Image (cartoon, rainbow, N blue to C red; front, side, top):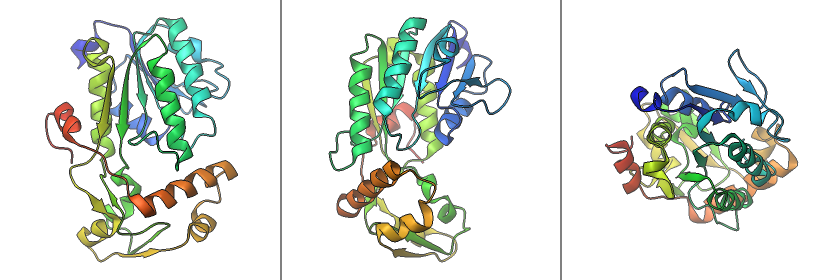
Length: 266
């Protein structure tokens, strides 16, 4: 990976303060040519920008050959954010933009998924060389089950809804590979990234080392306990997602994922 990077300029990870962006930075191996681009500087070496206005993006992306773009969760206007990043990338002469989307992006019942579908269209029509990643739900969303620290879990949707859970580290590994190998290999590709099994949260609880009970509560009840820090727009978007999960679950294919990893997803 280091050898591949040495032929070009830096790689910027826009949204590096979040768990996904941080995982992509880690998967790139802490190389000197990786720039953490964040909304507010968190530590020395971060490139502070205002993602809501684009201020600082031109400087942050100057000299980069690749850019990974992930927006904050349930952002109120992700297409505008991505449009600003694409404009700055074009001005900086970036060779390759990798956009972090989601499986099932065009799903009218989930407004924040539809925003990602709009962003995919912006990326594909930007004139830049691009790749889109579409991961399914993270297993780490239920870290308390996985690490044994939870004895009970409340869900705002059916405990039996099925998901193709993916590990964040696997998604980050694929992102790093795509960024390092670059557009000569990955331009024009859209990769759906699903886990190896269709599992429910009840399944996860039953596989835990210690007994974990799972209970479905109403969306309003869940929001009153866990969504107090969200904006009204964020609550609306998450509520729509939970109602969709309750009816349909959230599955994705894993054949491409396994091929990119060179092994089955964890």
